[in-house]
Amino acid sequence: MRRPNLARTLRALDRARAEFGSAKVALVPTMGALHAGHLALVRRARQRAERVIVSIFVNPTQFAPHEDLASYPRTFAEDLAALAREGVDLVWAPSAEVMYPDGFATRIAPEGAAKAGLEDAFRPHFFGGVATVVAKLFLQCRPDFALFGEKDFQQLKVVTRLARDLDLRLRIIGVPTVRERDGLALSSRNAYLGEAERAVAPVLYGTLKQCAQSVAAGSSVAKALAHGRKAITAAGFVLDYLEARNAETLAPLNKHGDEPIRLLVAARLGRTRLIDNVGV
Ligand code: PAF
Image (cartoon, rainbow, N blue to C red; front, side):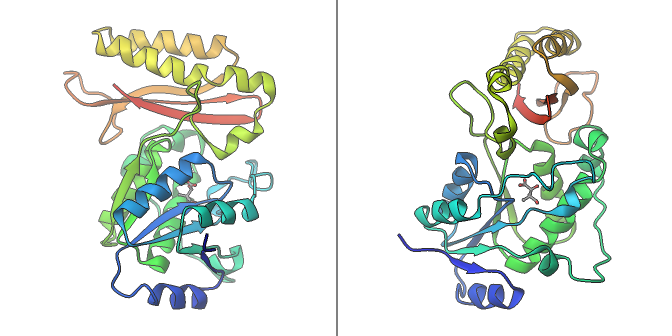
């Protein structure tokens, strides 16, 4: 097992990146606290490219002051060991000072899917922070491919558009959500769940699946969502949204009902906010 090269400064990153020469490079951007979902991204990256970079950076600009930046799980030593087992070539782990040096004053303001009225309605600062750091990661690492989980479905749409709009010349690849046996989508934030909350958490995916089945079987979308909202609230969640959207644009559904549909949910259990989504 070879430990991946670890770069903490731009100079070290440039040196390590130059050693890749003309090899195809894939980047897996993460905030660490790696789980099997991240490792699925890494494995897909290895299938796509000859060299794999994983970035680990808990990005302060995508957290609002009242959110969990300080308590976000940090497991750097375990993350490095897992990435070594996966044969990752390079870990890019800048400090906040390297990513946002004194005087930093630029922020990307994404529109389109970033203004769909889903995550953005509850975390208005979020996609600006994500778009800015992801654009920086792409420019720093210069990958041919970058891989993102479908669990953060709106984020996947936003970074896909960002890469196109800014001519960043890489291909964004979405990777299906990895789930626990009971259906709960893997997330670093699942670590916040208490025992009783963990037992309830799979209701979210169960309800999404039921809604998707009802819609596929011809039930009205509005009816299926109304049932779903009731079930999620009855299980003890505080629901932020359960919505059906165009799977490509995330726009509200048109009247003809002839488009690919994605069901998306966000809900809070105690202090833990969970998101998930499924296709119909
Ligand atoms: O999905 C995440 O972990 C983060 O939002 C990302 C893409 C690494 C940007 O900080």
